[in-house]
Image (cartoon, rainbow, N blue to C red; front, side, top):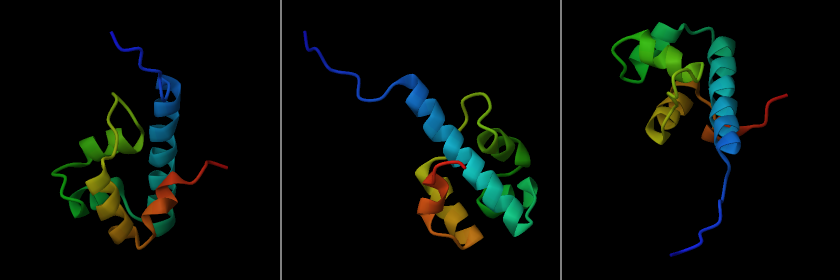
Amino acid sequence: MLNIPEIVTEDEIENFFEVISCNVKRIRNEKGLSQLEVALSIGQKSSGFYANTENYKHGKHFNLIHLLKLSKLFDVPIEEFFKPLE
């Protein structure tokens, strides 16, 4: 049996997704866009899924395609979503 070390903890994963969600929400607010406007712009049919991902509810989180589309929509480099929270 392999003894594979844990690379990241569940807490680190949770924090990672929370940082991304908070940064997306901050940038969306700075751009003056509603959740519905952003959801429709990235191909979601309603704001429900988007709201859950932006608030990291029910384990919903953004994937790489979402982040690529959001970076284009917000006209920001994709790395903006990964900046540590202040």
